[in-house]
Image (tube, rainbow, N blue to C red; front, top):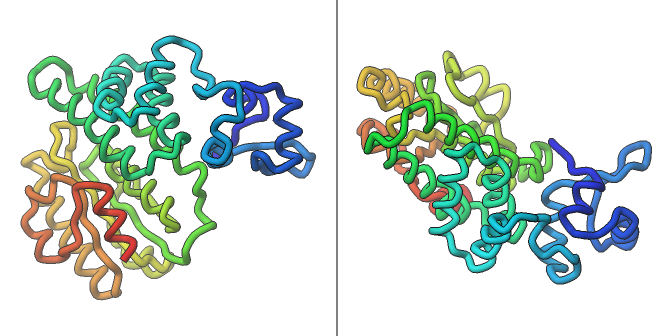
Length: 295
C-alpha cells in the first residue's frame, strides 16, 4: 500500500504541517503512526475527512492549482459524469497523469461511489478511446497507453482497502492468457475490496494452468471472469475465442464442483455462448456486480 506523507496531505488540504499535526492529535483526521512516531495517511483518511469536514480545509479543490484542474473539480462537484469521461479519455491519450488522477481520485475523495466512478466515468472514457480506434483516428499502441494509464490510476483506489481487513470471503479475479488489457479485472477487484472481500488477481497474460490447488489452498469463495469485446482485447480475437471459451468452461466446472460461485462480467460474454451454460451470474454494469456480490 502506498501511503501519503504529512507534506502531501497538508498540500491537499491547504494547511501547514503543524495544523495537520494538531488535527491528527484531536482526531479531526485519521492517520497511522510508524514505530518511530511518524504520521502516514491513506486516501481513505483524506476521503473520510472531506466527507465529515468538507468546509474545514482552506483548499476546497484538493490542491488543484491550474485552471484546467479546477474545471475538473467543478464537474466533480456537479456530478457531470459525461464531461468527466471526456476529460479522462483526452487526458489518458495525452499521457496527462495529473489530470487522469484528478478525475479518478478527486471523484473518489468527494464520496462518489466506486461503482458509479467505474460505470459513469471510466467505462465511458474507454469507449470514447475505442471509438476513436475503430474510426482510424488512433493506433493500437495509443489505445494501450491510454488504457494502461487509466488502469494504473484506478488500481490506486485499492490502497485504502488492503487485503486482511475483510469479510471473511476471498475472491479470485481472472484475466485470460491471451487477454492483454486488465482494466475490467482491476475495476472488479476494486468493487470487491470496497465490499469487504479479500482479492487475488491473476493480472494480464496469466498462465492459468491447473487452478484446483490454488482454489483449495486459498479457500476461494468467488471467481470473477471479465472479458470486454474491444479491439485491444486479445482474448476476443477470432483465433483465441475457442481457447478462451475452453478456459471459462473448464474453470467454471471445477468451481461448481468445489461449490465456488462463478461470476462473468463484460461485453465479451456475447462472444462466448458457453458462459450461459456454466453461470447465470453475469454483469455489464459494476452497479449490478455490486448487487450480485452482496447477495
